[in-house]
Length: 150
Image 1 (cartoon, rainbow, N blue to C red):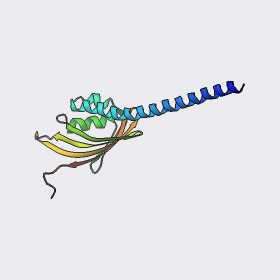
Image 2 (image 1 turned 60 degrees about the horizontal axis):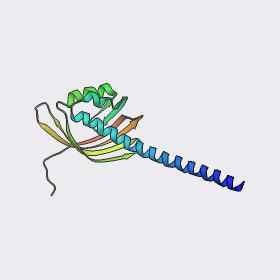
Image 3 (image 1 turned 120 degrees about the vertical axis):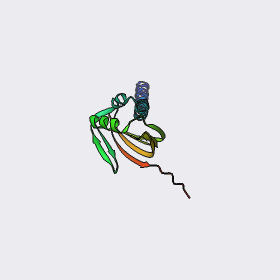
Image 4 (image 1 turned 90 degrees about the vertical axis):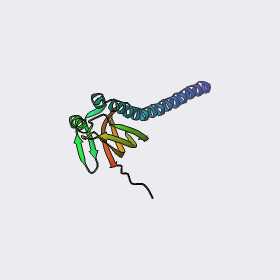
């Protein structure tokens, strides 16, 4: 009887341990998932496929450009892209950090203005995800200048 109880206890313990490992792996996958979503969406922007990019956003996405403007909803983001992305932006992602439903990205971006000249910026975007989609961003964008550090 004791031996049967020991076997059942061991099986239950093994099952609990396996469930914890599976849950840990699921959480690990989920964390990678938001970063992957953002990277895939960014590939669409680089190609100029803004509708494909917008498919990664929630309908009520909120974009806050600190010190500039706030866009509420996918339609406002679409209008912004038509206005600002005269040509597909050129950008790099230098650092990407993910924690839960948040992804932070730093990098550089160049945007072509109406005169056909590229303006260069450094950025830090803090993205919020919901249900596998980009629900909002707080963007800190600073224009690069030609000044050199002394």
